Length: 409
Ligand code: C5P
Image 1 (cartoon, rainbow, N blue to C red):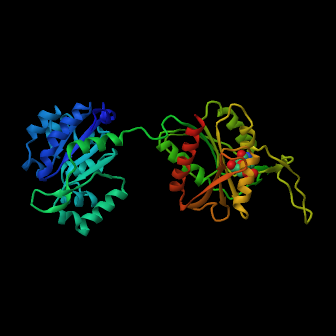
Image 2: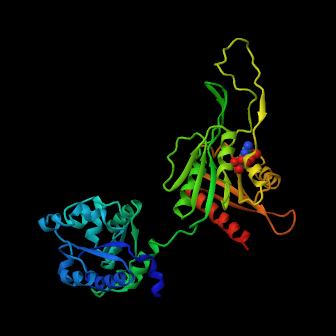
Image 3: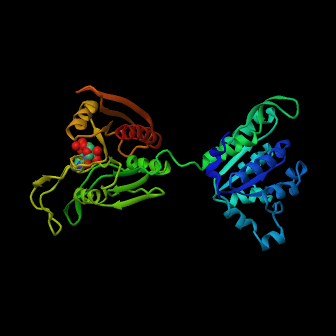
């Protein structure tokens, strides 16, 4: 293990929760490694943990008083249990015993560590350590599934010879491996610093003050791309039509209604973007004139005169310099053929073609990625999904990132 791999631990606040298991002795070395990498470590021990290693040892290594009582008048006067819950960037429970996993999975708060875990918003990593039979038991596995589904990261366990003489899975990871796994949790995302502008949702084109033309786009695909890109470290600018979705964390959003407002918002922020992804289902036409009062019904038929809206992605693709341009094509028939035509006609670098009616509003999607090959007229393709929009969004971002890296050479 190189020391560099632990660089992301510098100045991180790590709360090390220790439960009862023979592997507790490994926490002495683990604490030393975390401190050496620049982390600030506070230790919380259960009663059972203190049977295996003394609080004094952990205090000497962490440089901080060890916490073990839920109701501790001294601690509450200094760093009480709620302050302690707010303090860490990461809570690492190591060793995490079978009993502790069961108590955590069922939401117990009978001691300081379980209470902290219930109260804290910090990410949680668990390093299980137990006899192989206990590890393989269906009850333990069910508890782990519950904890995973709540977002806990499970580190290990290793397989091999155990303190009890058994051989099998259940050994706690070695301190160096645990320190490295913690460092990885703080590693910057694979899209760190990439600037991405994404359009999402439908546009609405007013007919009069109470009516408009629009489409069934829910915005879910564009929002999933924005959320996944931001989670991977990208700087995301989301230009959104009217949708019923919450703006994802760390995403900068501009809300618009019409296609022309969407174009203006895109033009206002396009300079300096690395990638543009047009997911929005932009209305192709708008009423030629917007009537200023509510139109009254009279004749059996009425004519609505429509004019073309600007093609946002086409307008942006024609600029120079321009970001990597990624389009979408939702079609009801000839999905791939129409997609290939749009890729070329709109001058795009990558296009995702999908079937429209089964996708609008749905939680899942299947899409065909299309891009130009190195030979002239050659179009390459790759089918993504069917899968949840978030998973397909990650696959799309991987392709986008590969294309962007290639364009930098
Ligand atoms: O022409 P069509 O609407 O099928 O093309 C789809 C692609 O073009 C999508 O990426 C969509 O966001 C974009 N588009 C646009 N401005 C329009 C129409 C579509 O940016 N006016």
